[in-house]
Every structure is written in structure tokens, then in C-alpha cells.
Length: 258
Image (cartoon, rainbow, N blue to C red; front, side, top):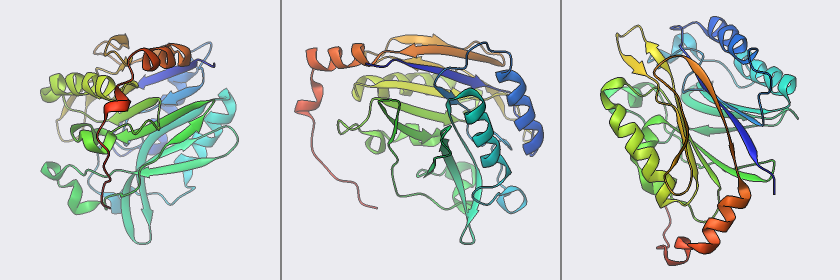
């Protein structure tokens, strides 16, 4: 059973500067001796949490997706994070999951943050994504999705839950509590990757990127500075825990309407 080594990139993001952010993240990754199997970037990592999609949206297979492809091939690792994408005259906060084999799949953020006007600028997604990567089933989600547990409910169909985010400092305690809860209730590893620093709207982010095991115990946690943290998650440990404590056998069955 293959373990999975993760690199969580808790980066400072430069406002509305895709090339500068790409170069900065690439420089951070170059400091590592081994990147591992999966690189996880924050939400809107090329621009910051930006409500001007007309100015900053890329097309599918645009420069940032091509950069992700390059990084994946360079390190023989998958890479994921969200960017602003335009498709069919609509704008999406779109997570991309790119592998070294040039496979790219997408997830469009379902829960748009109305208090920041995200729903006025972006279209909501309706399809969930589960990626199979190196014998792991991975469910990636985006920031505000964290507050809606039904959307993340594990139907015994994933092993690792990921949230990429721009989660502000005033709500940091909720970030940590909800990530821990999602791990426990879904009997899966749960990883949250947040940005650091201050954006052009004077919103402060203190990071708090963290990885939890299915029992809700922290495996690795970032300090409140820009940094990369790495951890390895065990498929064998996960399956042994699920066999010993099979919560999923008693779970309610339901469907989610589009």
C-alpha cells in the first residue's frame, strides 16, 4: 500500500500578479530536496482572492495551467490549486489537478462567498471531483466549501480531502475546527492549505495550513509565516482504522440535487 508524500505551499501571494506568483512559488519549491507526490497550493494562487475576473481570467490551458504542467513534470508530482478561469463567457474559481502525464481535471467552487460578492462575479460549480492518484482517491474542495459538510460527505469514495483557501485571520479558529471535524466525520485524511500575508483589500491571512489524520489528530501544521510543510500519509493506517471503526456502515444515504 503506497504512502503519499504531500507538500503544502503556504505562500505569500502578490496581488493580481500571475507571473510573479508563479515564479515565487517555483522558487519556494526549488528549496526542497524532495517534493514528494502531491503539491498543494492555495486558492486563487496566481492572483489572490480577486473579484475582478474580467481583468484576470485565463482560458483553459492558459499560462498558469501550462506552468502547473511544467512543475508536475519537473518533480514527477501532481500539483493542485485554484485559479480564475473563463469558459463559455462565464467565470469560475476553478481548481485544477495536474499530473506529470499531462492529465488535467477541474473542480469549480460550489459555495461562493456571498459576503465578498463572489457570487456576483463567478458562476457556481455543480459537479464534485474525485481524483485517483497513485492509489489514492482524492476529493479537492475550495475555501468556503469547508463550511458545508454535506457537500464533503464521504460516501466511502475518497481517502484524502483537500481544501485550498484564502481564509482570513479573524476566522482562523473556525478554519482549524472545521478541518478537524471534516477529518473525523469523513474518516479520511483532511488537509487545508491557506495563504499568508495581506492582500490589496487590507485583509490579513495568517496561514494555519494543516494536515489531520482520520482521528482528527494533527500530522503537521504550519507556523504563521510563509513556509512549505511536508508530511506523509499512510494508506495502510487509514484502512486499518476504517476496518476497526467502520463508521460508514451506519451512515445515512442521500443524494445532492444539482
